[in-house]
Image 1 (cartoon, one colour):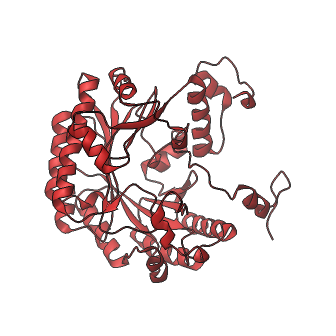
Image 2 (cartoon, rainbow, N blue to C red):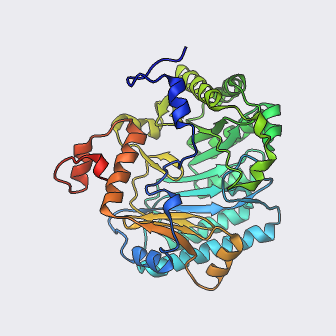
Length: 407
């Protein structure tokens, strides 16, 4: 039996109603509303007037992987030529110089996130060179977190040691599912023994927060696969677990056509997998955070959730409160109080722009006061499942709550 909601609709009814392709709302307006009307000149102007009373956050996109996983929705490609990757590092630092030229003053950085792609496709030497370049350009004295997304199967002892030397504090390991059949269906081989070694090695190098990325809704995946995977990875006591639903969008990501659509679980099966995973994790001591994250009670994410200070950005749920996010690299997204911008998404175009001294901005959206207000409402709903409309109105200088339908 499917329980009924207060509206009288059953869970099955609600699944049918909302089983559609929609933005993930990692921002508002969403990336689908970004347009070329916002370009390099806008981004340069926003940088010049960025707030100076708080540290900024840095995001660096590394668009390289050992192999292309068929489920992937990220901007990345298979690349194993180290010369190509090393030259990309050179251009990341060159883009940082372009940004700082627009800012016109030193910038304090509170957090650094290496995403991708697979950041550990960088050689240990390039990782340290990149970090040294950032340290030479930005004030990292207040940097409270250095995070990286990692593929355990590509991780090496030398890379882990280099990560320790740069002060990596949080690592997110891509696991997805440990069933051989599911892994074969998405071209993502991962072994539990490798993940176990990676977690231990990273902790020995001073990484204090380990996150594991898991997925549901993958081809050939069933509740049994999800729970069996959880049974293995929870023995490692990761501080956080992110549980994402697979988004099948082959018209946007052509490599997803390699996945057999007949093997994909339907909406009800996806929902059942998600609920089974949540129940399992909560029974084992992880706290549910927002829509798709879980954290042990000691973790800063759980503390922020308890205190009502949780936020959500392009990397998921976060404790980061910086008003400015500077994205470096192909397809990277940046945010200031004035709006959002995204870099060129084709690597060759990004390389050409940076190489000629041009900010590689491709598109974006300027925020109106209404956008900022609605975005705040959506973020609170996604973080807290409730919203104090009067408090949000006060933050945005609105005298009293107004009908949301007016916006």
